[in-house]
Amino acid sequence: MLTSGAIKVPVTTPNSKDDPTDVKTEHITLPPPEMWGALDNRSAPVQPEPKPADAGAGKAQIIHAFINPSARSRTIPLVYPFALEGEDVREITVRRLTLGEVQDLLARTSGTTLTAMDIYAEMTGLTPEILRGLDDEDGTAVTDAAYDFFPPRLRPDNASSET
Image (cartoon, rainbow, N blue to C red; front, side):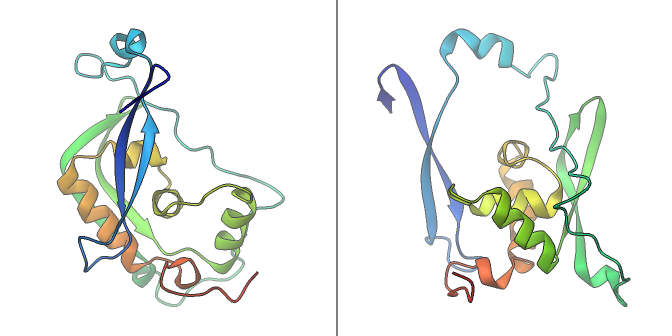
């Protein structure tokens, strides 16, 4: 789609693990064609900046240990691994968010539209752009695992108790 010289493409995000037709479609703007050569990652990988780890005040801190921490995460081996900042990424770990992490995410994104991909990014420690760049097979496996851990109050079919 062309709007005012900008190229926009549709990107779909699943809203349901079980219903493949339940998707949200957004249109994202691609970089201008003159930048495509610099962004071509077929020869020399140019990686996006990883999401910075927030430190200090405002970040939820866990002060206790969960009794069964392995139940709070799932590691997905990638069929199509990739390189990020010179390191091979062969698996992605998806983890459940704590109440404080969900509150921090909501505070950071206040006034903006929070997408499922933003939440998946928080659950994996990768940026939404990196997740969107996964091969579809790997992306589906990661988002399916993430959907299983999706915070209940952020699910589209649940009304939040917070206003």
